[in-house]
Picture 1 (cartoon, one colour):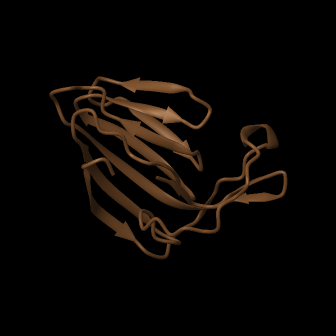
Picture 2: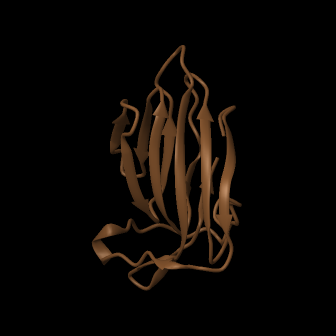
Picture 3: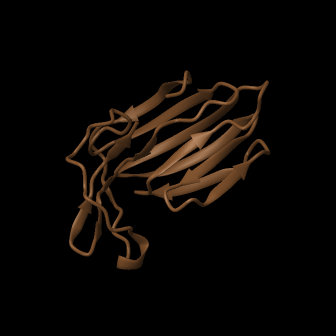
Length: 139
Protein backbone atom coordinates (compact mmCIF):
# COMPACT_ATOMS: atom_id res chain seq x y z
CA UNK A 1 0.00 0.00 0.00
CA UNK A 2 2.90 2.35 -0.60
CA UNK A 3 3.73 2.63 3.11
CA UNK A 4 0.18 3.74 3.97
CA UNK A 5 -2.09 2.14 6.52
CA UNK A 6 -5.79 1.43 6.78
CA UNK A 7 -7.97 0.52 9.75
CA UNK A 8 -11.58 -0.66 9.82
CA UNK A 9 -13.97 1.52 11.81
CA UNK A 10 -16.99 -0.80 11.59
CA UNK A 11 -18.14 -3.89 9.73
CA UNK A 12 -21.44 -5.66 9.24
CA UNK A 13 -21.56 -9.24 8.15
CA UNK A 14 -24.94 -10.25 6.75
CA UNK A 15 -27.04 -7.37 5.43
CA UNK A 16 -25.96 -7.03 1.80
CA UNK A 17 -24.88 -7.33 -1.20
CA UNK A 18 -25.82 -4.54 -3.52
CA UNK A 19 -25.55 -5.00 -7.30
CA UNK A 20 -22.66 -3.59 -9.41
CA UNK A 21 -23.97 -4.54 -12.86
CA UNK A 22 -23.14 -1.87 -15.42
CA UNK A 23 -23.87 -1.46 -19.10
CA UNK A 24 -21.40 -3.06 -21.51
CA UNK A 25 -19.74 0.24 -22.44
CA UNK A 26 -18.65 0.76 -18.81
CA UNK A 27 -16.10 -2.08 -18.93
CA UNK A 28 -12.73 -2.58 -20.54
CA UNK A 29 -11.98 -5.92 -22.20
CA UNK A 30 -9.11 -7.76 -20.52
CA UNK A 31 -8.06 -11.19 -19.37
CA UNK A 32 -9.75 -11.53 -16.00
CA UNK A 33 -7.61 -12.56 -13.04
CA UNK A 34 -8.93 -15.32 -10.79
CA UNK A 35 -10.83 -14.15 -7.69
CA UNK A 36 -8.54 -12.46 -5.20
CA UNK A 37 -9.89 -11.84 -1.71
CA UNK A 38 -8.52 -8.40 -0.96
CA UNK A 39 -9.77 -8.51 2.62
CA UNK A 40 -11.23 -5.02 2.27
CA UNK A 41 -14.96 -5.81 2.08
CA UNK A 42 -16.62 -8.72 3.90
CA UNK A 43 -19.03 -10.66 1.70
CA UNK A 44 -22.62 -9.71 2.51
CA UNK A 45 -21.50 -6.85 4.71
CA UNK A 46 -19.90 -3.44 4.97
CA UNK A 47 -16.70 -1.84 6.18
CA UNK A 48 -15.79 1.68 7.21
CA UNK A 49 -12.04 2.17 6.87
CA UNK A 50 -9.69 5.06 7.52
CA UNK A 51 -6.70 5.20 5.17
CA UNK A 52 -3.52 7.25 5.56
CA UNK A 53 -1.11 7.58 2.65
CA UNK A 54 2.37 9.08 3.10
CA UNK A 55 3.73 11.87 0.90
CA UNK A 56 4.37 10.70 -2.67
CA UNK A 57 2.94 7.21 -2.11
CA UNK A 58 0.67 5.37 -4.54
CA UNK A 59 -1.59 2.40 -3.71
CA UNK A 60 -1.68 -0.62 -6.02
CA UNK A 61 -4.34 -0.55 -8.76
CA UNK A 62 -7.29 -2.57 -7.44
CA UNK A 63 -10.99 -3.36 -7.73
CA UNK A 64 -13.43 -4.64 -5.11
CA UNK A 65 -16.97 -5.89 -5.59
CA UNK A 66 -18.42 -3.04 -3.58
CA UNK A 67 -20.13 0.32 -3.58
CA UNK A 68 -17.61 2.77 -2.06
CA UNK A 69 -18.06 6.22 -0.51
CA UNK A 70 -14.58 7.85 -0.23
CA UNK A 71 -14.46 11.06 1.84
CA UNK A 72 -11.28 13.16 2.10
CA UNK A 73 -10.42 14.16 5.66
CA UNK A 74 -6.93 15.70 5.38
CA UNK A 75 -4.39 16.58 2.69
CA UNK A 76 -5.00 15.74 -0.94
CA UNK A 77 -5.18 12.58 -3.03
CA UNK A 78 -5.50 11.85 -6.71
CA UNK A 79 -7.89 9.10 -7.79
CA UNK A 80 -6.23 7.21 -10.67
CA UNK A 81 -8.59 5.30 -12.96
CA UNK A 82 -7.69 2.40 -15.23
CA UNK A 83 -8.33 4.44 -18.39
CA UNK A 84 -5.86 7.16 -17.29
CA UNK A 85 -8.48 9.55 -15.91
CA UNK A 86 -7.38 11.38 -12.75
CA UNK A 87 -9.48 13.24 -10.18
CA UNK A 88 -7.91 15.48 -7.54
CA UNK A 89 -9.54 15.60 -4.10
CA UNK A 90 -8.03 18.58 -2.28
CA UNK A 91 -10.69 19.93 0.09
CA UNK A 92 -11.78 18.08 3.25
CA UNK A 93 -15.22 16.65 2.54
CA UNK A 94 -14.51 16.01 -1.16
CA UNK A 95 -16.25 12.73 -1.93
CA UNK A 96 -16.02 10.07 -4.63
CA UNK A 97 -18.70 7.38 -4.98
CA UNK A 98 -17.46 4.36 -6.90
CA UNK A 99 -18.69 0.88 -7.74
CA UNK A 100 -16.64 -1.97 -9.12
CA UNK A 101 -14.04 0.27 -10.82
CA UNK A 102 -10.34 -0.51 -11.18
CA UNK A 103 -8.50 2.34 -9.44
CA UNK A 104 -5.56 3.49 -7.31
CA UNK A 105 -4.85 6.45 -5.05
CA UNK A 106 -1.82 8.79 -5.10
CA UNK A 107 -0.71 11.38 -2.57
CA UNK A 108 0.77 14.19 -4.71
CA UNK A 109 2.24 16.06 -1.74
CA UNK A 110 5.95 15.89 -0.97
CA UNK A 111 5.41 16.87 2.69
CA UNK A 112 1.89 16.02 3.97
CA UNK A 113 0.11 12.76 4.64
CA UNK A 114 -3.31 12.24 3.07
CA UNK A 115 -6.20 10.79 5.07
CA UNK A 116 -9.65 9.66 3.91
CA UNK A 117 -12.51 7.54 5.19
CA UNK A 118 -14.21 4.97 2.99
CA UNK A 119 -17.55 3.26 3.58
CA UNK A 120 -17.67 0.05 1.50
CA UNK A 121 -20.86 -1.95 0.93
CA UNK A 122 -20.45 -5.44 -0.51
CA UNK A 123 -21.92 -5.89 -3.97
CA UNK A 124 -22.49 -8.50 -6.60
CA UNK A 125 -19.62 -8.26 -9.11
CA UNK A 126 -20.21 -6.24 -12.27
CA UNK A 127 -20.93 -8.18 -15.47
CA UNK A 128 -19.48 -6.84 -18.72
CA UNK A 129 -20.41 -8.71 -21.91
CA UNK A 130 -21.17 -11.79 -19.79
CA UNK A 131 -17.81 -11.67 -17.97
CA UNK A 132 -17.64 -11.13 -14.21
CA UNK A 133 -15.27 -8.37 -13.09
CA UNK A 134 -13.88 -10.06 -9.98
CA UNK A 135 -11.95 -8.29 -7.23
CA UNK A 136 -8.45 -7.66 -8.54
CA UNK A 137 -5.11 -6.32 -7.28
CA UNK A 138 -2.26 -5.27 -9.59
CA UNK A 139 1.05 -4.72 -7.79
